[in-house]
View (cartoon, rainbow, N blue to C red):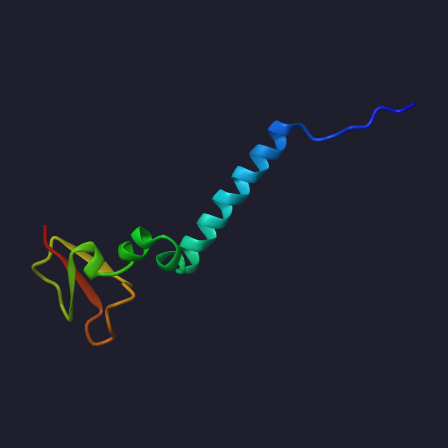
Length: 81
């Protein structure tokens, strides 16, 4: 008679946690995280980070590029601290 091999409960729990973390990372990278987790959506917006979209940002403390709410004519997110 052969003994059956099965997955331990620890392995199943660790696999479930890894799957959840992987889905969260994919959601953040895909840009849909703002709909799922509002905090992450605010972090991808210029206004959510306390900035303002401008054409040129020379007097800014931080210049952020690629913010999804800044338009082509105002591509720089100017954050003053």
